[in-house]
Image (cartoon, rainbow, N blue to C red; front, side, top):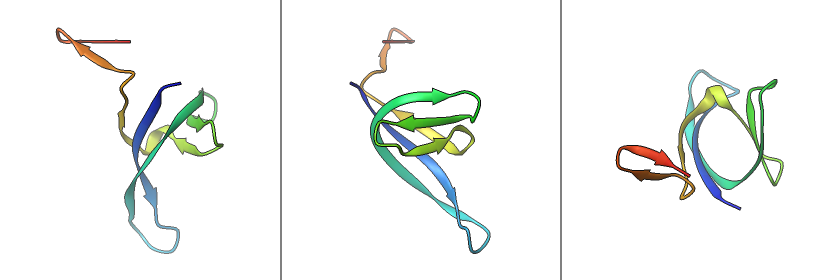
Length: 67
């Protein structure tokens, strides 16, 4: 299984603002209804909060991404 590193924004629940966090794991599925990514360990990251996704599963070849 491919591991993905996702950089995402997490709002501060006590005041305005928040911070960017990074999470690495294996994706179990994308939930289109809830608009989130669910990892194999149950971690949930909402798609609207995602800043960047990195993985060796993506290869950049001649200007195109290949899997």
